[in-house]
Length: 298
Image (tube, rainbow, N blue to C red; front, side, top):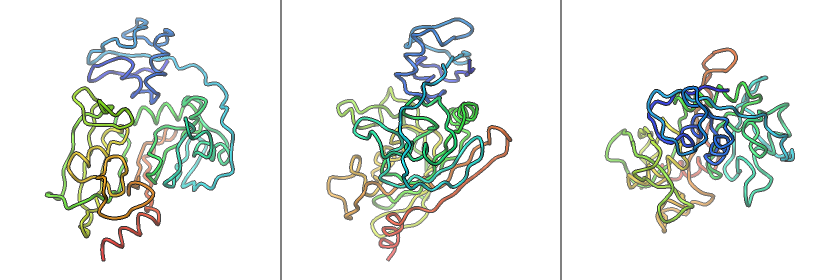
């Protein structure tokens, strides 16, 4: 069983979803199966309210063999060893199979190119420790065994993984840097969108201006948490949505950006699960991003 300490309280299923990096529905299923203990006692209610300081144990069963097929899809592997890999996901590629995207995903490519993937992510998400949106490019951390997966997921839950993005946003910022600290959850009326909501999960994004552009700004955004669409929602809340964002941007964009938001996961830093060494990787944005950066500089 993997131990976790609750620092802020809240629902058991929500806490385990974040701490173990699994979906809330899977966390709820494991809880109902009697696989979760709170302070030494089995707790089968997903909505059980935790208190700060509670000790939670979760028994994650051995994963079923993946039914996702390996596919020979081009994928840049920045680094790999026997425990993990760092890969560069291009924009337009979905991370793992889901409804509407049964194959052609990064996981299909990983199964073909790597010699092993952790099973904790489930049958459709082997190796996946964290995700980035389909139209966001950049670096992703992949676990090749369950021991590494648990360590890396714990680092993400404890906010000790350094994740920095580059983003081109609409307009000029009033300050050189700042922080957005606002909870994110499902949009109250549009379930396909996320929004800042009072009962959402805590979300914090630090940002600073890298370049002032023509009618836009290039920012570095550093995540303290990793909520769905976090940077896109937080920047839109400031009145500076990410350029090209079809969901949170204006209906009429000031520039005809195609292919989705100009957002790039450019840096990731973590502690290696086996060696304890701190490792940091950086990667430049892809050509589509650099084209608009150059165009708006002129």
